Structure formats: structure tokens, C-alpha cells
Image 1: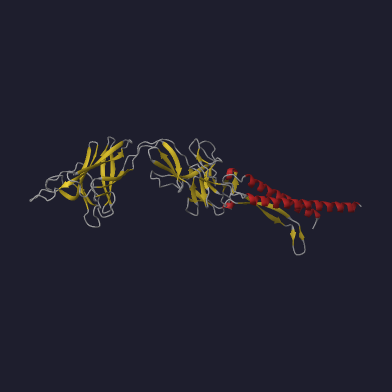
Image 2 (image 1 turned 180 degrees about the horizontal axis):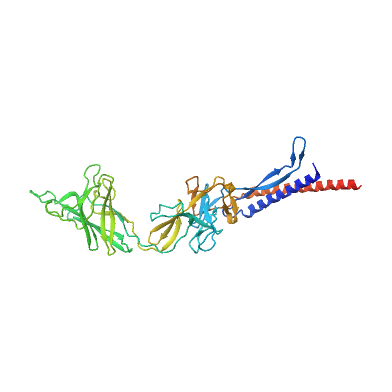
Length: 454
């Protein structure tokens, strides 16, 4: 063992404790930084000589220990597009190089305080743009996982959506009041230009066929002729029959072309429109009519859903004294102006319009790594992949080992101030102790020189 070796070891200790103090100061300074991950310090001993007969002083170096996998506290915020992750996973982000171009380098972060910028991209407070899977088609349920890229919110008006499906739920009285033989209701739909159009549904009781002796009742029980009128176009009538057995009483049992509105069945009236009747009319199948409408913009097929065969939903015939409509729905919309953007817990990014219509433009995935603590830290609480971190695994939130998305929230720093203060005191004492070693070794060297000179 030499005095110079002792000096070198103590100097190494001073350097290592300086590095530890630097990490502590960085952690304390960023204790309120959104998504910040603390860096701890590990010390590694390097030996120059060590065996059964001798041990020479070596050196110590400080190595960073990252805590990318340690979650910070999640708090609710007023920003509706702010996101936090509960569990594993990182947001895939890119660094913009201009308003509409981005660096090819892929970054990852837990900083989820995203908001649309002037170009419509979702950007967090450190300037990184959120990546997502673009929507495929118009269903809002299909996404392209191979085309991950920046999510952009368009504030352009939505195009009109022509109605293709409309449903009605109502009850026809099983015993209408005397003198009442017909009921009407109106369903509003939209044409291809976004204009509101009305479908008038007329329900007429079916008269009993002429017979000798005359029928005891003027109308056939449980049968109604349905006529659909839109402008000058009339479709029907269609004969709708309701069931009479205990299991299906009051529910639609069949839909057929009407044989006529009066007179014997041998002189049927031809329905005004060709309406394909449901092919399969077994219990549980849809009881719907395929209408072919024209509002001056070409043929517009519309499916009129009356419920299910044999099921007490849609249009029924139960007791009551009047025709009561409980609900009417349709899937069309007029042109709409941008209203807002929302993010669903599934990660779906949805644009809302003032006409009630919505459009799903993307889904936000999460990214997992086998060793997230080996990711390299970058500016703005961003991370990049390394050989030690492994390859990224991109999956929908809540699948593939990823955590859940919390909408309207953000993750804070994972720095524990009390722990940092404790580590600061330890680093300070260790640094002071190393200075004592330097001073002692220096004094011994001076004594040695004095001895030689004396």
C-alpha cells in the first residue's frame, strides 16, 4: 500500500460523491417536473491489486441508476386531452422539425399533458408530438398498427352523412278505441346533401275480408298495414302481423306484402314500392324493411328497423288506448362544425361536431420495453431505446402488459424529496470523509519529506 494509492482512492471518492450530489441536485430541481424520472447513484469499486497477501487501494466510480419504471403520482387536471398511464407503458412521440415535419428518431415519454397546437397536432409541454395508429375506414373501430405517426386534429367541417339505418320503438294498442283505425308518426332522416327529410309511417288496421255471413268484427285482430311516405314517394303497404301465442304475444311474427286494403283476398292491391321482406323471420332475427328512397340526389337505400321477430322490442302491440312512440334513432347527420376533441380510455381520439356527429381519427397505443430502466434519457423527459432496453413492444392500452390510460390526468415526478435529503446528507458526509483522507495522506507525505530532509 502506498500513500499515493491512498490519495488516488480518496480523490476517486471525492469525484464519485460529487457525481452523486449532482444527481441529487438534479432530482430536487425537477421534483415538480411533469413526468420526470429520478436518477439514483450506484458506486462501483475498481481494484488494482487484491489477493491473499496484499490489497492495494483502487478507485471508485459513480454510475447512474435510472428509475424509468417507477411511477409518479397521478393527478386530475382540467385539460381534457391530458393523459397519464397507470401501470407500464410509455407514449410514443416525435420531435418536430417544423410545423408539419418531424425527426425520424422515435422517442418515448410519460409526459402526457398533450394539447392541440396551431397545426392541430397533439403536443406535450416539452414540445414532443404524440404518435398514434390512424383510423381505417369510417367505422371508428379499425386502425393500422403499421402506420404509427403524429396525430393531427382537423377543424374542418364534417361532411353530411346520409341516413342508411333508422329504428323506431313504439306500441300499437291491441284494442284501439272505437272509430280509430289509423295511426301515424314521423321519423326524421338525412339525405346525401345533409338535408333533413321526413319518413311518415302510417299504420292502418286490416279490414276483415268480405264473407257471408258478415264478419263479427270489422277488422282482423293483430294485423296492420304499414305505409311509408317520404315526399311524393310512397312505399307499401306491408302487412305486419303480431303474434298471439303466450311466448310471442304482442311481438312481430311476420312481415309480408299486403294483399290489399279492402275487398276479398282475390283482388289484392299492388304495393306502391318494391320492399324486400326479411328473408329469415325466425324469432330473434331483425324485423326490418329495406326502403329505396330518392330525394333528388339519386337512390338512397335506408333500412327501417322495427325490432326483432318474437321479441318485445321495437314495434309491439300490447294493451293501451293510443299509439305511443318511445324512441326513434337514425345514423345520418347534416354538415357539422368542429366542436371539440376528446380521448377515450381505449385511446381513441374522437373529433366532436356541433351536429352530434363524431369521427374517430386515431388510437393512442402504449409502448413497453423488457428493461425500461435501460432507456437513455433525453431532453424534455424523453427517452430513446438502447441495446440494453430491448426492442419496443407497441400495443393498445390495457393489452400486451401495458397499463391503463387515465384521461384528464397527468403524471408528476417520481422524486421523493425526503429520500433525496437523506441521500444528500450521506453524500456530504462521505465527501467530507474523503477530504480527511486526502489531508491525512498529504500530512504523512509531508512528514516523509521532512524526514528525508532532516
